[in-house]
Length: 388
Image (tube, rainbow, N blue to C red; front, top):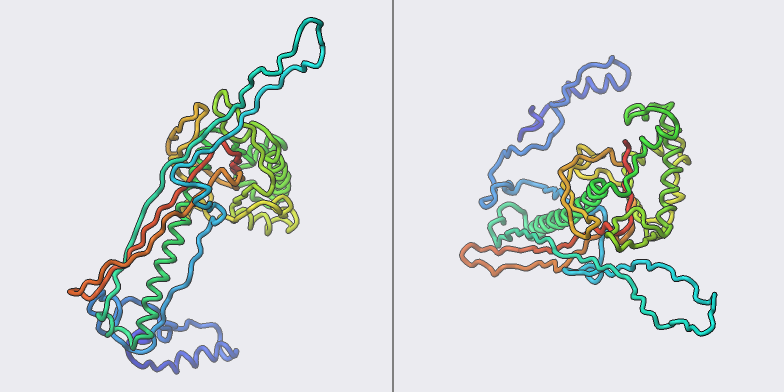
């Protein structure tokens, strides 16, 4: 382990062995790589800084390990004008058609042209917001011993700021991910617009495939071709004006249609990669995604269980009230297709402010405060595609 100590290490023996194996002078043999590889560790061989006791005193070069992170699901963002703290949505309900009064016309009678027929509307309302905050402390001079000069100290604080920015981006992403998860859970709980791809395929073909056997080479390509055709048909159905694929309040049925350029298609990247690599490249093309806002989702909720979610979802019922479903594990999830107004989030009143300088402690605090709003509108169209 000499390579990981503050010492000089003679490696000629190891180097000669590597050279002989690399040039064909010796057969493959074990090499003690631990004797010359420096491995990152947290054990400190010199003194710590006096404040955070996490940074060593100045030795030589410092590597500041930080990189910008950009949140996923940016397609869900709405402006504050689109979605505020209390937003109302006016929905229009189709009225019934009248009989023609042109015929028959009877002598001695008149046609009432002033008969009242009120337009039917349905108002839905959105309330609430999520608040959270964080802060960090900026020291005046306590960290001077840990860095070689003002420039290196500035790099350190730049890294701290970038880390906070990355955390903020991920906080946005996590909440957007949960908004998407609640929509999926609510659709499943309401049994509205849920497509069971494997079940439908088995019914259509007379097969009895499972999520495991469908992945076998002989089964996969025919299944992929069928899925492509099925999904292509479904996105076209969403463009039709109908009462399907969304929750309707009893007595006030709202007709919806979602053109291709108003559709959002979030597809499991795990399955997308399988579709493009295990089948022919042109089997699953982007023909019906060409005008949609699409994004490949690496995981829906938990990174170690990428194709499932486990949520206690709330959703709109046909009485116009909100119901909360039992906690349920849902998956495998192939994807979700929805109207652009069905799911959204807005970033509101995000603030960064510095607390007054503490003259006794020689530091001040930087505070970050956030207000985010998320919504699911189950009266808008959406499809949940499951591989079961």
